[in-house]
Image (tube, rainbow over all chains, first blue to last red; front, side, top):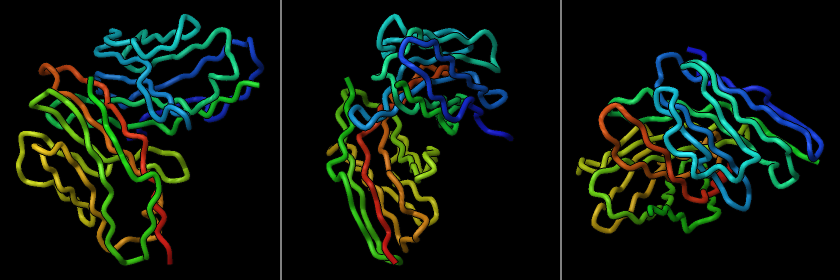
Length: 114
Length: 118
C-alpha cells in the first residue's frame, strides 16, 4: 500500500500565481480531507469529501480557495490568486470509514508564496 | 463547537524514562473518538493511538498508553521507556461520532513538542 500521495512536496510561487495541490487517497478509502498547518493556527480543516461529495467546506478561507474530487482516486486544492499568507503545509488525509475512523495522512505539500 | 487544549507547548525527557503529555477537550457529545498523532521533523503525521469514548478501558499500543477520563474530559498520553526516535510534535485530536458509513474531520490541539535527551 503506497499510502496517501501528495504532489508536489514543495512549491514556491510568486504572489498572484495559481497554485494546484494534488492528492491521491489510499485505494478503497471513501473519505478525503484537506488540512492546513501554520505556526499561528496549527492544524485546521479546510474541506472534506465523503464519496467524492464535499461535506464541509466551512474551513476554506475565502473564494480564492477551491477543491475538487472528480473521482475516488484524485483530489485537487487550488489557490487562485495566491498570497503570502497562504504559505503553509497542506496535508491531505484519507479514511476508509468503518468503526476505526482512522485518518491516514500524506506527506504534505510545503507551499511558499513570495 | 468542540475544542482541544494541550497546555504543554514543550516537554523534555531523558531516554528510557517515562513522560506524560496532557490533553483536555470540550464537547457536548456523548460518543466520539480521541487520537494522538506524532509529527517528527520529517513532518509526516503518524497515528500513535486511538480511544473510543464508549470504552472505559484505556487504549495501549506497545510503549504508548492513554489515561482517558471521560467525566473530566481528559486524554493524556504516556510514553514509557522513551527513545530518541520519539522526539516529535505530538497532537491530540477529537472526532465526533458520525452516521454509519460517513466520516468526520479531526479537531486538533496546538501540539506539544517533545524532546528525548540521551
